[in-house]
Image (cartoon, rainbow, N blue to C red):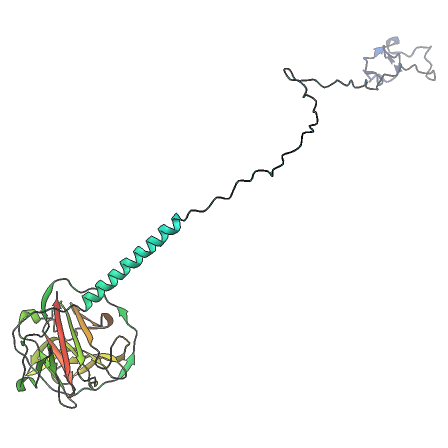
Length: 342
């Protein structure tokens, strides 16, 4: 038997080592034998109950931080408020300087644009003179045409080196019956053909009129406003083959349906390379048209009044030749302001 030295509770279970009530170590009693005075029915004495009620919480007064004083009592003020309304900052006026500067900049841009526009018009309409001597060759044949429609794009500037300029103020190209009655009149070179035919006049046989890798421009018009059946215009890479002119003709038609076309003069059976194509850049009636051909290698580009219209390839492999003028029918055609650049 074992007994708790604290609460004197006894246990018969020898396996216990601690009191089940207060946890104190148990002591063996009677050398392991139950005492004759042990009464299992006796009332066990339990220790007095422990106080479990927590102590009352102490309330501490608030502390004033060091070096601080409570705020002074507020004394209500009875003085009257201001009689005038509260001050309001006036709105700031916007400066007119940005509008003035913007307007000046706009006027400057418009002025520059106007000057550039005038300069371009002056360049396009500039007249110049140059004289050159040489011979001419002519031929007559017939041609068939068809018409389509196309859209044009603007051109770029030709070469800057002038080779020759001729305003036809001095007679250099052939005239008279040997030149199919071609003539100089009013500072222009006039040509015409018989009904149903065309005539080609080649430039003098001089290097300044050669067309290899050059830009050729000429202004041309119908003298009486009547449209030639087969058009009129400029010939490049022109030469003679068995007495007949060959080369490429870049032509305009100035009737009710202004058009352009490109033909290959073969000296035998002419070929149409670009069919008659309606174009708003071709001027009708007696209005002049500036025709321009730019030759670069085997590529020949056609411009009318400064606008690109089409290109062809030198499939015949001419590579070079002379300038020529093309006219058809009996209606006179005038040429002026011939320029050649390289």
